[in-house]
Every structure is written in C-alpha cells, then in structure tokens.
Length: 336
Image 1 (cartoon, helix red, strand yellow):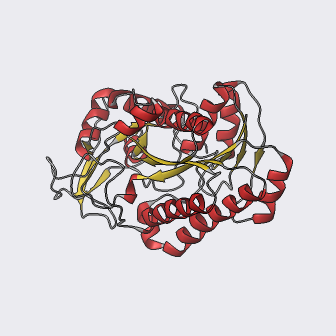
Image 2 (cartoon, one colour):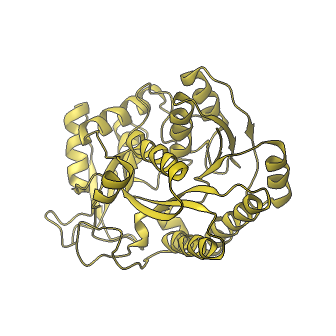
C-alpha cells in the first residue's frame, strides 16, 4: 500500500512516516516546510533505512497536487499538514482559515478526482472548547475558543458533509490531546521555529540554557494547583493510533471519530516537576497572565479508540520527559 503523508516533515508527520515505513507501507511525503525542516525527512530515511519520495508542495497549490496524484497510485492519505499554534491563530486568523481549510478542500477535491477515498485526518481536542466536565468522550458538545480549533472543527464538518454526499468515502477523524516526547533514537523530535508555542519544547530549551525561564500562563484556573491541566501523550503512541485507524479503514466503511489521549490530566507544574525529576535540571519559571484562547482543563476518555481500534497509549509521563530531553540534548538547535 502507498500512503500519501501531508505535513510529513513536521513533528507528528515525521514520526508517523517512521511508523508507516517500519510496518511495511510505501509512503510519499508532501510538506511546504513552512514550520518544518527538510532534515527531518533525511533522518526518517536514516532511522528506517528506507528511501521514499518527498515533494515540497503546498496544499494551496492545486495543480501541483494533481500532478502528484497523477504520478502515484495512492491507497490512502494521512493528513497532518496545517498551521497549528493556538496563540498565533488568535493573532492571524485569516491565514489559519485560508491555509487549513482551503488546503484540505483542495486535497479532498484531488482525492475525489483520482478515486482515493481513504483519509485519516489530524484533528484536535480543541474542538471540545472549554468542556463542562472531564474526561471528555467523543459525544461531548463541540465548540471552540480560538481560530485554530475552529479550523479543525470546520474541517470535521466538511468531512462529515463529504461522506453524506458520497458514502464510498472511508474517513477517520483523530482528535489529539497534547503530543510530546520524541523518537527513542533522539534523531527526530519537535523543532519549533522561533519561540516555542508548546510547553515541552519551551521547557527543554530552558533546561539546555537557550532560554532563561519558562512563562506559566495563569495560576488561577479551577484546577488542583491553579495551572492548566492537559492530557500529554507520547508522539509515538499517537502515531501508532494513526496506523490503527488506517487499518480500521481497510475493513470498515463510513466516518468515525476517535480521541487519542491517555485519559490522565497533568498540570503545567506537574510537567515541570516530572521533567526536573527525570533530568535533574531545575526549570526556573514565572507566573504570568492567562494566554488568549487557552482553557483550564482538558483530558480524554480514550475508551472508544481502545474498544474499536484496539489502541491505547502505553508510554508514561517519565518516558515522555526522557525522550523529549534526549532529543533536545542531541539537537540543541533542533534541526538547524
């Protein structure tokens, strides 16, 4: 089987590419490299010992997408490509809507034209907005608190409408919680450009001396220590969920949505203390005001994925911290 991986040079896409190759799939990767690095592609090849085609295409470039689909017989698409920073989306919402939604519509139109109707879509727990209770299951009401989350929710609705219009499509929508960690080799990991938007890479950059201290956005949430609580999941567990979803599409028609999380919530201060315990590195931090678009608490009920996909997260927070730190130590400037 040949799988098209969009956004395959990014943090999650590169780990998914490794997993696909190690499970015997052929892949083609497309990425515009706007928030990723070509070196991640080379390192995926190094880790797996396998070669594969890479194209620096943008999903907004419809004609290039058509040429790509004309060149290969794809069996399915794993769709990771998109802008992904909550805070940035509040500042530049139009770019997020144009890039994430138009790019996905282009992709689906080309898939339809070439008869490729299996899609694994990378969604987000942000579609649950500010939930009334936790843990969150897939039946919870959907709402959003920021433009990034709104693009994911809009795309989910577009995919639901697409399936209603043509029930030969097979689609899985995967709602991620908070992926951290890195490949055990320390060769691929999260490599933000500029100031990190996500918590773990900021912590590791403080630990290695690139940044003086961590800013903790808010300590007045209704949580046990006042800081935001999230469901952190190891990126390798996350991408294994994608392969389970892909296998599910081989055997089942329709469109299904799954949470990919551990079912356990940890606060910002929990993550800092666990990281310090694992690495013996103290992380200086200061409490600042809440960040626009953030919520207090969010963690998954992952039972549906375990029951239907046979998948569940296996790595604990200690492993997530160890692998994140190994990646940072081996690559003090990321892929740069």
